[in-house]
Length: 443
Image 1 (spheres, rainbow, N blue to C red):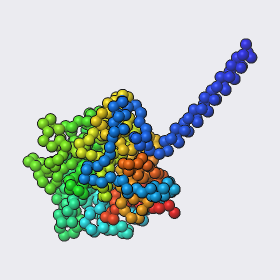
Image 2 (cartoon, one colour):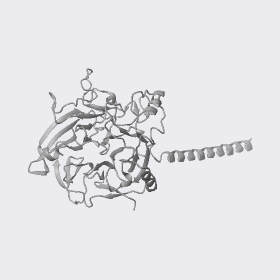
Image 3 (cartoon, rainbow, N blue to C red):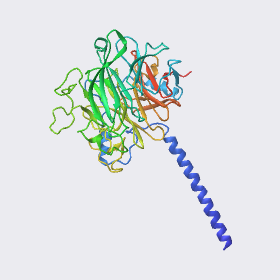
Image 4 (tube, rainbow, N blue to C red):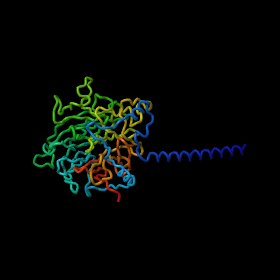
């Protein structure tokens, strides 16, 4: 009996050790598989059959008036970047300059070469040009905003396409339980100083929670309209269902014309907005919907495609190409995965991500820009983006006629809060260590 018990015990121990070894090997394999983000064209699970069909039939083409990225990502560049993966350097762009939680960087498009840096606490600074080592204060809104929450504050800045002549610029900030979109004007005697008394509130709407405020503003270079990114209002899982609710501005990309005013508004609704003139009380400002918290979007200066990064809930960070009237799925889906319900969801009519990655590779995507500068020719035409939590910086090569390819440029220890470009289309990134950085070729 003792011998049998000892044998059985030894057999159980041996089996346990074998199982543990297999589990370790499986875990390592999973980690290796997750080294890079995955395209929704490559991996989809927990979807209904309708969703699977949607993926295979999805086209990510822009409006018919826009080109695609095809042809910009040449085969030779892709071959080169494969050899340079994880070797790109991140360098301090303005040695000696630091800011408090910088989270936006813009140029005025007026030929001045100035760079504008936005601090979350409400101040905007000017760096005179790309070689300057000094910063001067352009505007201080710290007394008007509420930045008590981690995702609140002065969140976005955009310059009117005719800023050189009219001096107009726009900001997106959080007030008390609200989002405010306002217009300001520069001092007529000094374009390096904004007139704090010139504020005209363009649009305001309530925020039920302190998080998921979106915040990005950008003018479409082609149609001249102002695009606004809004989060779903916060709270885990979109408890109010704002992403799918067309009667609220939350969880959307909005589009308005700030050069005209409709009755009762400080802006007008573009005539071709998808819900213009509807009879169901849908908000006519909506351009696209079904978003959780779009943290940065940008127009490709070469193709006019609208790229957006949408921060995920518990599992998926995603990249979308935004098109008029489309539904990007939240909170029915988180990326290409069912969220509500957690399985078997109906994805019919939903736009799945162009690309996504899973936690813990990254946990809060920071959207960037398609690179169209000259300093890093190997990255020409690629979408550069990163992750606030893990510090990764990636380049996404998108060509409709080929498989999507993603490359790791650098693994940093930075909390990457935003990307921006100067008038020459050279790329910068802001980080919560207070510095402004640029990517550099491997040493």
